[in-house]
Picture 1 (cartoon, rainbow, N blue to C red):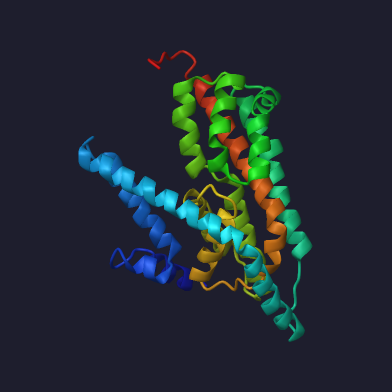
Picture 2: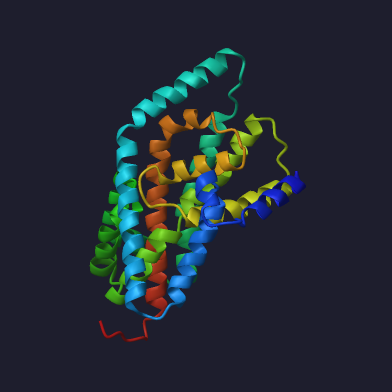
Length: 288
């Protein structure tokens, strides 16, 4: 109920900096990360700041390497998920609404991709078809690689060489968007929560939806732009809030298609932002 969510929101503020990492409280980790990031941005340029930025960049590379290992052994995890799920289904657990769930996820992605973003471009005086045609190489790589971070060099090259976005705008906007502009992941987290809670028999109220819309948006900002990043983030977040995640084992085999579409949507959204920022700054001049 509302009191339970309020208590959980209060628990997001940690008593010490290590507790969220030890208890796998994803929202607390995001809160700490945001605080550290703001503090770094507020620091004056110095050797200490450069050292800290280099440290976090190195830790990010280590994380990406570990994620690549996890993906390689993922078939074992899928087998384990299905074994447990098969046992539970045999004992009477019902699986409902899976087709509706996937239809909702795909519909949310396609509406954002084919309706909302083109309308935003049109409202800003840009031709969506022209932007899409110029960014097609990046969108293709994003779809097949399922990694917006891995697609970033192609995204920047397409924006600069095909779309005509100026280099300073591209090099500033696109890396930021790759980190925080996760349209598809936010929709996936929200719809997955609703689906899993419904299958667990929980009552979905308007207040619950509003809270999860906020949580999904904030969590998506902290998602890594790597394959399966949103799936792992969703599982960690849901487990931390005591939402049953067993049925994610059913979602997992189909998630490859969802992940490809989500990544293409994220890169398409990044491209739209870069095009709009460059358009808004068309009267500005840059040194580089």
